[in-house]
Amino acid sequence: MITFLPVFAAAAVVVGGAPSAHAGGASPWAKDMSSAARLIAARGNSDDTLLRAGVEIRLDHGWKTYWRYPGDSGIPPRFDFSASDNVKAVTVLWPAPRRFDDGSGGYAIGYEKSVVLPLRVQPNDASRPVTVRLDLAYGVCETMCVPARADLELILPVRSGDHDDLMAEAEARVPVATRIGATPAPAIVSVRQEAAGPRKRFVVDVAAKPGAAVDLFAEGPTPQWALPLPKPVDGAPKGVRRFVFDLDGLPPDVTTADGATLKLTAIVGDRAIEAAFRVD
Image (cartoon, rainbow, N blue to C red; front, side, top):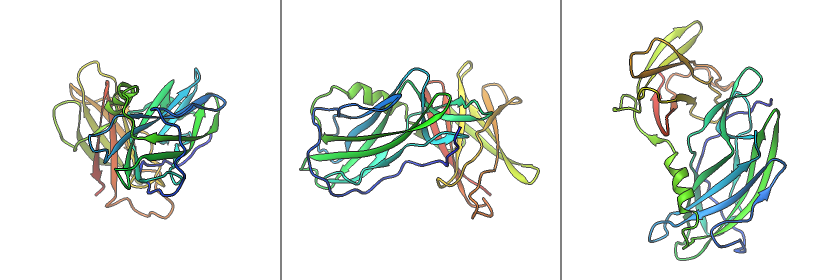
């Protein structure tokens, strides 16, 4: 398996391009060896100041693709919207992923079968049509990882609701921002720091209803951080799942994590939340 550094969703300012994209709510599928990708769109707000679109990726049986932080191995997606027309910024949203055994003693984070990554598209001029052009680079893995590419384009806004349900389902899976200590479940109720040899270790308690599947992921403040995947451990009180991870994987030029803000994403059943905390 090939190991890559994490990548975060960010707003990308884009300019240029000629308005000659596909219309009708979805671009044609761009097929690769074991996957296919397209742009879709849903109806936005009444004044079209923020348009709703998405990147849909379908995978062959047994293949997976990756979250913004791929974990111990994998290829994070990368987005280039620079050829778009009448687009000021695009923000990529990330539905809750899951962890996979990567076959090399570690774990990867991502999606199987299919995923829609919602987009928030901000026009320069809301009175004019928008052409979204995306140069997408992403990875797909079965027993080995291979890169995939797709050149996609779509005209916005759309007035039909053909993909509204699909988009709404993906948006509902995007983690909700919360704070450490929030209640009720699902919630990240506490983060405790303890010594673990030369490194700091964090103990994270996640409140969940009995029987709910729970997982936890940790990210650093920049894509150059590669934190270990939190491990589930015993010893938590009733109604709480406990995870631990060491403060490892700092960039080579970072001598201390003190003052850094880390992000935690908890997946609890069919819901997901995220919260940030500061390392002291």
